[in-house]
Image (cartoon, rainbow, N blue to C red; front, side, top):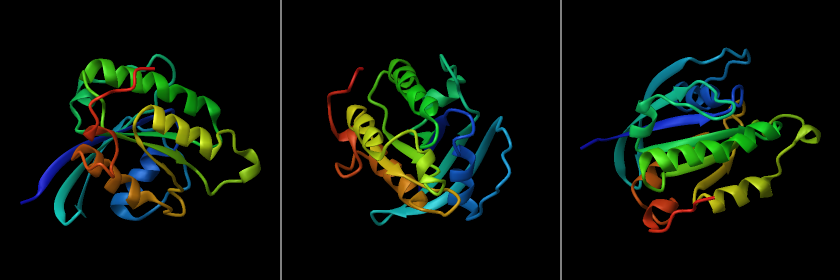
Length: 181
């Protein structure tokens, strides 16, 4: 039996949400930036010996005071993406989390992703530790990735399934207390 799980990718514009999704599903990377309206991709994956059909909702980037379609709040899990070279993209994640928390009425099963680790390290604006600290505060899984190099991409989506399923290794959903920041 295949379990269907819906996951939305959320974050600031141009952080690599689409690149992560396409790298995961199609194993390819496009160097040209194209603004996303909304894309829907599907990928079959096995996690902990169980078969899943992962439906990815690649959303357009959000800037300040995020507004989402109601469909975003019906997801099973979320991947919050920022660019390690863009502090503003990191800062907006708290607003996104707060919006999810209020509109879903629960601790959202999520994974926090710092993308673009393949770029020049001297231009990094968000440290790995800052990402880890925010993930801990949000009770989320955490990865730094490179969609371009396909570094940790599969791990992100396997982790979000673990979070959805309440696997203690996967993160917060097994916990009863939410972080309200």
